[in-house]
Image (cartoon, rainbow, N blue to C red; front, side):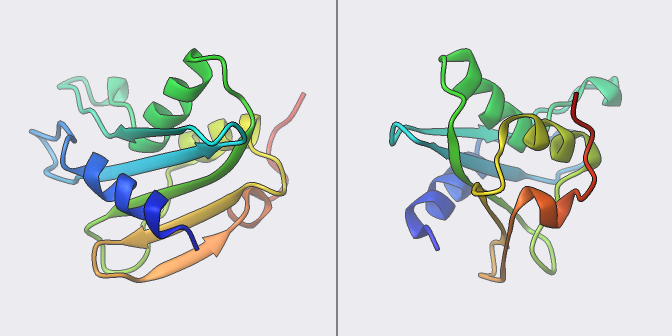
Length: 126
């Protein structure tokens, strides 16, 4: 388990822009290079334009030219470990391999470790 990655996801959670739902989510991805990119959810009055924390972190890494993901930590104030939405799962499937570790957690310390196959079996691929 990557405590550092979870801590960085928790710090990113504080930057969430959530004036409509008040549901803060943070994410941090670790790359093969060792670099870590963080993201938070960013809401919009037109809800379909909202961007989740996971996609924000993944897109930041890709926009910097990095596509070799080692692990991701996602955190929120939920009863159990936070669960990514379908859109985020599909974006993860685009970039993650079966070796990419996914940490789903909450601010109370509950943790579930999985992979892309675990959260999105039979995902769409070209």
